[in-house]
Image 1 (tube, rainbow, N blue to C red):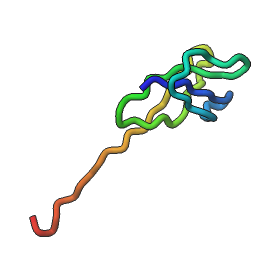
Image 2: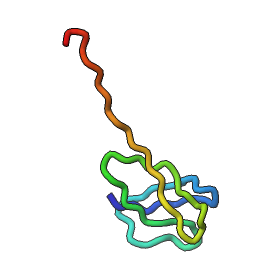
Image 3: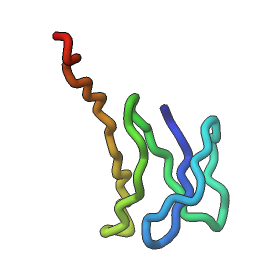
Image 4: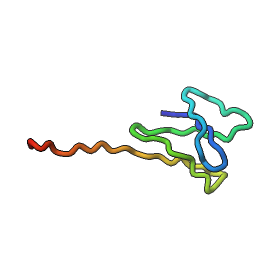
Length: 68
């Protein structure tokens, strides 16, 4: 899902908006394609000219039932 992500100089995310087509002036923002099952954690700003989204993934673990 494509989203407009507004973040600060440390990579902290301040806002995620869906359905936007333009970046607001005066804000640090990028468009990010968020994969299914992923959660956007922060923006890696190590290279300020090439910011990269960092995702977390939650894996569902089900343990066997004691009756199995």
